[in-house]
Structures are given as C-alpha cells and as structure tokens.
Length: 133
Image (cartoon, rainbow, N blue to C red):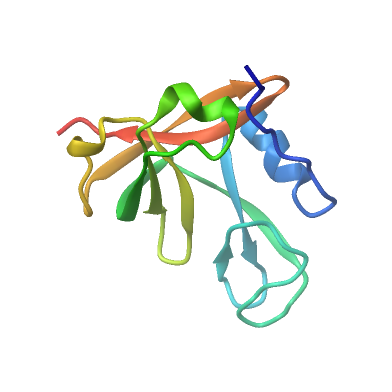
C-alpha cells in the first residue's frame, strides 16, 4: 500500500509545520490590523502588511461544514473510507479543513471538536475528534 502524503514546507510554512511537530497549532496574527490567518502566508490578506507574530490556538473548534468521502482519492486512503473532511472554525478569523475522526453518522454541523495529531513519517499532521458531549 502507498504511503499517505506529507506536506512539503515552504519558506512561509516551515514554522507552522515545526510547531505541529511540537504538538502546537499556531497561526499568524498581523501586527498591523490584528487579523489572524491560516494558512501561513507572507502578507496579511486583510491589509497586506507583511509583519506578523505567531499565536498558539487551544485546539478546540466547531464544525462549520463537512463532507463524507466514500471513494479514496489515492490507494493510501482506500482502507479508511468512508471518512469525514470538515471545515472547522477555530476562532473569529481562522477556519481549517481537516479530517474528523468519527463515524460519519455521528458528525453534525455545530459539533465541538478537539485537535489531535497523526504521525506521518517525520511530520505531525493536525486532525480533529469529536469533543465529549
């Protein structure tokens, strides 16, 4: 079976992926307008200011939308279908796309989720699980 893909960090994303390897989910906060952004970028999409600082999020979020994948996109995911891919709000400005490790029938819009990590080679990747109700 093929290996699952891993990210290839760029100049803008290396610090993010390094933080993931430390078990921390960090976003950039613009030092000019305060907009928090994810995915890491060289400039703020709100005001185009290029200076930012890192802010660690607590790992909790809310499912805003989701889909259930029934057909694996590659051989590496064939044994995992069906699985949930969701848009998770982690703050006022931050929404991420990630797997929610739960039975598809158990996931609903508005569910609270918590961050967890999957090790792929030398890289930790973020995922979510349903928070205890």
